[in-house]
Image 1 (cartoon, rainbow, N blue to C red):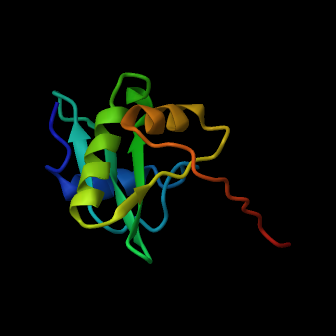
Image 2 (spheres, helix red, strand yellow):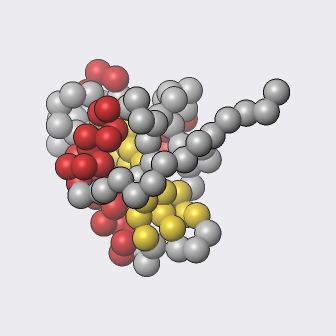
Length: 122
């Protein structure tokens, strides 16, 4: 496995490829990196979006064929460390129904702090 942080351009490419995923962050700004499998396939991307007040919204995306294989945790941990190193306070947001995301966040050390309600006016 390649290490997170090696290929920012590959991370952006994967993010664009999977941008229609409900888990995708839009826009993807900040520091992003990708992870590759031994055969060169893109496994996932991770990073953070800079928010006001020194908040970093940490996010990851794992290619569907690599989900459930233990890639999310290391990607999330690396992105969290980079956010902290950049002087930001990392946060993780997830839909309450996204059990995989919630489990990843808990493994990395995030704790539930609050809930957010979002809706679109018709």
